[in-house]
Image (cartoon, rainbow, N blue to C red; front, side):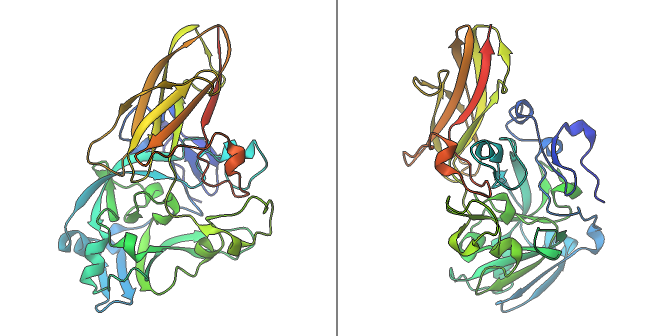
Length: 364
C-alpha cells in the first residue's frame, strides 16, 4: 500500500486508498508558489515507487522515428524549460455541488489546486525529434505506471490523452522537478506530464509512454470518466456519450481566509484568496459581505508574462456584528464572470464547480 505524504504537510485527507488530500485554505494562500509538501495529491490507485536509473520513456505511434529514452538521455538530449502553472483537479470544490444534490467522488473543498514552477523538457521538442506530424486532428496519448481501480471496471493501467494542438504548444512539459526540487513519488517521480490550463487528469504522473494516434486514448479513464454530464443524468449508470471531455478549466475563484464558520471581531476584516482563468488574464475580483448584494473590488497580485499562473487577491471588508455570507467572483480578460450559484453548474460527477464561492462567518 502506498504511503501518504509526510505529516508535516498538514494535508486534509479525502481518501486513504487511493490517497487523495488537499491543503487547508490558509496554507494554500500563504505563498504564491505552492510548496510541494502542501500541494494537493490526487491518486487513482497505489502510488508507484520507481527507480529513476531504470525508468524509460518510449515514444511511438504515428511518428517517423520511435524513441526509447532513459531519464539521463531525456535530460541531456532536450532543452529544459520552467513554466509557472496552476494544476487543478476537475473536481475542485465538488463539496459545493454535493450540498445541492449528491455527487460521486471525493468531496474536495477549494484546495484541490496549486501553483508551482514546473521544470522539464517541452513535450513538443520530443514529438518533433520523433518526427510526429503537427496535425491538429491527431491525439497524443500517455501511458503510466499506476494501476487504476474504477467502480464497474477491472483494474487497468492509467492512460489519458490530449489533442495534438495542445501537445505541440511550448508550455506542455515532461516534468521532473517542481519548484527547483525533484518530484516526490506522490507527485509523479521520476517523470510526469504537466499540461497548463487543462484539468489535472491530463497531467499524467509516472509516465512511461507517449503514443501519437488518430483517436483519443482508448481507456476507461479517457472514455468513461472526466466528462461533463448534463444535469438530467443524476445517478449511475452514466451515459458517457452524452457528456463532453473536460480539458480546459473554467474561470474560478475562492476565499481562503477567513475560513468557513469562523468567528471574527466586528470591524475591518482582511479577506484573501485566489483566482485563475487558465490562459486568460484575471482582470477583476469582486468581494461581498452580504451574499452578493453589494460588491467591493479587491487588490490583485499576479505575475506578468505568466499566462498559466494564478492571481492572488485581498481586500478589507467592514463586518457589523452578526452573521455574514462572504462571496467572491472573478472576471477575465474576455469580460466573462462566474455563475452565481452551484445549482447552475450541478452535474452528477461533481466536476467544474465555478460558481461564486461563499463562506459563512460570524462577527462579534
